Image (cartoon, rainbow, N blue to C red; front, side, top):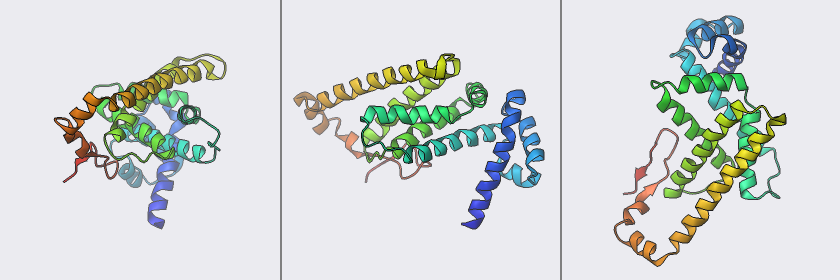
Amino acid sequence: MDHENSVERLKAQVLQAALPHVAFDGWSEATLQAAMSDSGAAPVLARALFPRGGIDLAAAYHRSGDAAMATALALRDLGALRFRDRVALAIRLRLELADKEAVQRGSSLFALPAHAAEGATLIWGTADAIWTALGDTSCDLNWYSKRASLSAVYGASVLYWLGDQSDGHSATWEFVDRRIENVMQFEKLKAGLQKNPAVQALMKGPMKILERISAPKDTNDLPGKMKG
């Protein structure tokens, strides 16, 4: 465990040293080289932590934001909030804890065809982090539909936030509320359909296979498995 902690500390140290350079060099090899120098990390160790250079730095920064959001959300009293407001708060915390320039550079990097799939995976990871932090216990098809919906909301919110010049990003928070309202309307529609006799008949017949879909055991088990 001590070794694991020391590795995580070194990773955080290099990542922190990289941030001042991202505005000038983006998430690049040059940024990693500067971070290794500024942090005093042994090049061989830093290279082992970020073997692909800038792309690994950018991915690590994104995941560190997910972790920071989960920590901040755990400190909040959510008892009086409607569930949609809890989701909105999680998205707001995730964005407020991020550096806009670093996110902008990361968005540009993950928009490239070579890295688009990884960018989508990271957004999915954020949606999963939010649902997990909010205590989601779904373990069937709903596990996927919830994260797919929230991934779309979060991805759109990031793009809106990057261009938002309103005071305190108030326009972004209003945008988030509207997108979440759209998702809640869809969830209501889905719940209504599930009570429909025709849909129930389908679920007992040709669509019964959907019942065999389960949530992955961990983040490396996507896209899930079929129950035996």
